Every structure is written in C-alpha cells, then in structure tokens.
Amino acid sequence: MRKVRAILAAAALVFAAACGTTQPADDPAVCGAYSAGRSHVEVVADGTVTRVFGVQPGRVSPHEGFLMRLASGCNLVVRVEANTDFTGAFALARGDRVNVKGEYEYYPLGGVIHWTHRDPRGRHEGGYIAAGGHVYE
Image (cartoon, rainbow, N blue to C red; front, top):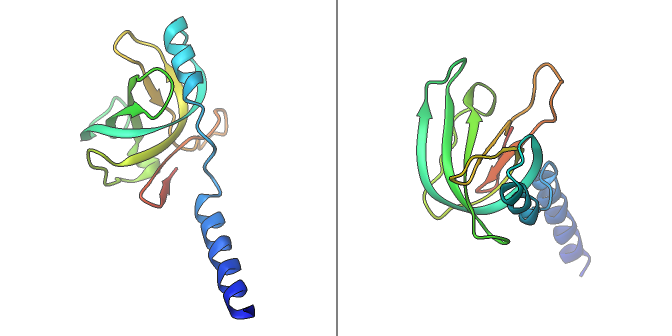
C-alpha cells in the first residue's frame, strides 16, 4: 500500500509540474469580449483546433497560427497566433485540444488571441499555448 501511495504521489507531482503554468479556461470572457467588440483583453481559452496555418513570416518575426473553436460559451472560432522566436514551432493537428492564454483582439470574424508567449522586455503579461502535454511559452 505504501508503494502505491508513493507512486501516486510521484505521478501527481509530475502532473502538477507539467501543468503548473496553465490556468483554468474562462471561455465566457472571450465570448463577452467578442460580443462587446472589446480588444486588449487578457484571456484564457480552451478549445479544439479546427484549422492549422503553420509558420508564416511576420512583420518582425515568424508566427505560427491556427483556428480554435471554444469548448464552451458562445461556440466562437478564434484565431490564435504565436511568435515562434519564443515558443518554437509546435505540432498541432485538427481536432487537438488546446488551452491558450494571451491577449484577445476583436474583429468581426471571431477575433485573435496573440501574445501567447513570454515578453522578453517584461512589459506585457506572458501567455502560452498548452497542447499534447507540452506548454509553449
């Protein structure tokens, strides 16, 4: 019995360490920002990848993007963008479950969540993309 408890405790620690930087999703906050046409809203969203755009050159650095249908709330599809200079490339496929933290910007087709990485200058709250047991910051 002691051995089982020790194994379970170790597994819990590994799980906590792997998930330590993620936060619970608040999809209704994204839906509210979309409905009100608000931008510059820090959000945490959870959903399913519906389309992957891959890595594209950006104004300053390359970005990787995808579309995500929110898991709850208003059935909204938002675009997610990540600066791969910070996150590195990440492998996503249609149907993957993702948890995303970043800044929501409104536009009529659903909006975009960006700043899904750390800010090296420390002026902006850091974000992430969590998928498949990995957290990309």
